[in-house]
Amino acid sequence: MLFLGIDLGSSSIKLSVFDAESGTTIASISVPDFEMDIIAPQFGWAEQNPDQWWAYIKTGIHALGNKHKVDLKKIAAIGIAYQMHGLVLTDANLNPVRPSIIWCDSRAAEIGNGAYDLIGHSASQRQILGSPGNFTASKLKWVKNNEPEVFAKAAHMMLPGDFIAAKLSGVAQTSTSGLSEAALWNFSEGRLAIEILDAMGLPATLIPEIVPSFGNQATVNAAIATELGLSPDTKITYRAGDQPNNALSLNVLKPGEIATTAGTSAVIYSVTEKDAYDPNNRVNTFLHVNDADGKKRNGVLLCINGSGILYQWLRKITSIGNENGLISYDKLNTEAAKAEPGSKGLRFYPFGNGVERIFNNKPAFSGIQNLNFNIHQSPELVRAACEGIVFAMNYGFDIMKEIGAGGNVVRAGKANLFLSPVFREVFANTTQTTVELYNTAGADGAARGAAYGFGFYSSIDETFSSLQCLERIEPNQQLTNRYGDIYNEWKLNLNIENKQNEYNKTSLL
Image (tube, rainbow, N blue to C red; front, side, top):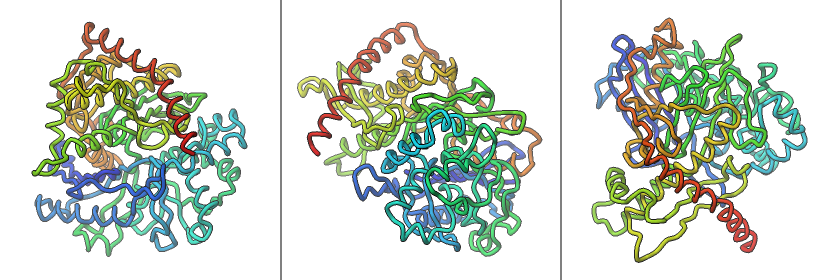
């Protein structure tokens, strides 16, 4: 019995087919062949076209059948993972009424801050474990305030994965965990946070049917099944935001277990049985995928926006003049390994992709410090970028520890920046954790989630019984001390950097 996992990212969309009987992924594909554009009509904005996502997914499913020879009729169910916090507004026929305002768009931050003050900080923290911030509810309010004619056309508010599920099934739905990432879940009472909608003047009628993360959510529409070559009995049995799903992919489901990833953004995600939250909203808490009555499971999430997207930028910059097009990421990793720890004093501040939560959603700009044209070459530049990303992650990890969401072992998929030996070394020794690497990815986890939601497995433990650790990277005391000194210097200059950026922004205005 086969299960399809879809992982809708902001750079690409990955699809995997999982054979539940053998416990193996039999085919994987990424679409499109290039990195998807993020449209920025104004500074701080970030949008993508939901219909384009859907077109790429259809292309990917056809390719699984035609190129990889997967018998699509044997796919029993589909699981969907997706970029978190995005807003998709559709009409009654499930057609988008505007582009999606995606996760790294910062236009609604002040709206969320205003709602936080209006609701009252203690009340908001009690209800949604934080502030509406720059999450989906605030983006919806922005549309109402600034595009009333568009807002009037909207029949459904969905997250990106909800939209893909709706295009597959013809039914508008969202999930409990999805509502929590939208800042619309009342943790204290286990229901839709009507209080947030009321405070923002938003109608509850825009919220579609609410379903759990696992289970028989919907059946693929017969016409769509025929178009894609699927069985008309194919179910949708799992959906989750990409970071809860990444944790699921790594079998991070119990209190104290921690997952990390460094794709377009960098994330550390820790599972807790408590309604833990940061009073300053620098890290955020959401329902984990396996939350259940009498078995509370939340995920505390740290996010740094500028991670893989910084590496992508470096790839483009260092490829200028290359007749063969863009250099490979492997080439970047090789360059980084040529430089010594500390990058000869070069420091990178990776904050060039929207407002950062660890700075309370205030603008924080990317910067390179101590650059010397006679000393620093491409190896130092690339290594300093890796170090800067990890240092930013560690800054947030320290915040997580303050609220009891730390730990000594972190699991990651051997993908994206964790393919880099330098990045892994810097991460293990800066965070002082053991890093466990697994041969899994978001689409694989979504497919396993679909199998569990379908009922093929009797427990989540059984679902992940075939998952194997590939490698462990232990911190080295000598390197820990060295990276600790470099990190402390980086952190010491962080406030100076941010104050200077604020000054520059003000003077430009």
